[in-house]
Length: 169
Image 1 (spheres, rainbow, N blue to C red):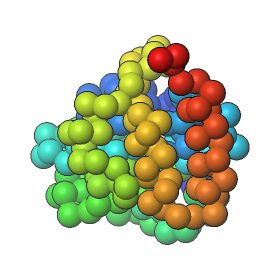
Image 2 (cartoon, helix red, strand yellow):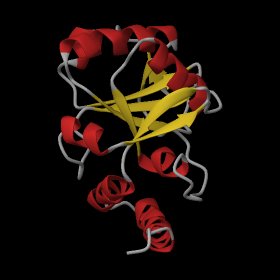
Image 3 (cartoon, rainbow, N blue to C red):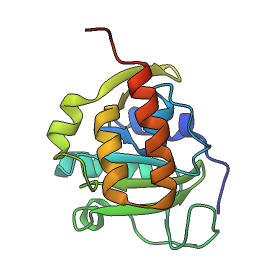
């Protein structure tokens, strides 16, 4: 089911359903103007409230979400009932959707609790909607916590971008 990633369609679906989320990861940096290598999936942090899990599960059904078994570029996924009861017991959900690979993290490593993450997020007008995006500082913290090789390369670019775009004192 691996489809070409369409952040626009995923984000519009989440917004349409009123999901409380923040874009994180590489796409969060890209939406703020950081020139990172192409990302294969869209990562969001989401509120773990019961009402939000209901809205999120409705959005996931609309996107035809299936649980992804492998990496974003793999075509391995299984059909499973994705509803609020299933989501309430998870910290991370990796999925394949009609709009591409999509991951939801309820407690992203290296990031603050969701309420603080949301408060510190920037809101960016994109695709005709208001998109909440994690602060670059929080994205850097999560990349450091992940400790993956690709994240180390992204960290260099992120830190250079932040240095070059720091407002004057």
